[in-house]
Image (cartoon, rainbow, N blue to C red):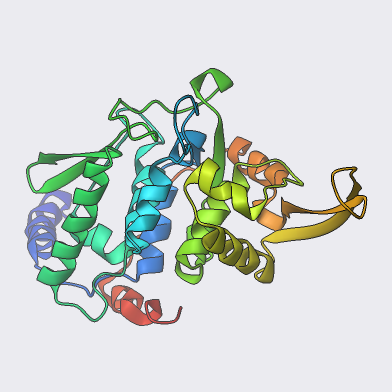
Length: 302
């Protein structure tokens, strides 16, 4: 006959000892796996970004309406924009609008750890954050061993961030998470990224002459042309040329080029994604035997 009490006294210590057993440290997860998990925790399918990142609200007394985006472009290093968009995606989903992760996670998302020692990768990340602080887009706050990044207003004014939910909060557009999940953040050039953000802020069939990008966004004609051409070649933008009747032209006609974001970038698709409730985040769990297979295997495939 089994003695239930005696069975408990013999098995419980064994279970306790097994729980205390130290497992070997697993390899770092792939960037793609970590990125998908972190984005899933926001409970959204995209990130809302105010137009103020692209251009100021008013042109009164200013030669250019350029916003912080133009200042990022001048660094000639896309990592500043890349870091900002990632922090924005992680921090803007809920109050107090901050992202709290170890620096090693950010370094991995930015791929700074590829072909670089840990100290050098961490230092590079710190320099990027310093640039974002100088632009007054992010505020750094430490809690123990974790650095918190508090999101500030997209205008670079240093004012507190408030998630836009209506027009009174400022004009805004959405950047779908597929920008990261499909690897577009790794594929696009700096010029293409800048022009993608501008295109997503525009209505279907928008028309902006190359010469106007400097006045409106602080972006050179050559950068605008490279970016728009690249987006067309990648199938992100549809381009249409039409002739408009004009008495100001010696021929009586003016050629006008219009652009429309298509596919997952189309406004209708992005609006639908933003209104669709995301699935509840479920932690990804691996056994010690499985975890060895989710390391750096995909990090160098892009």
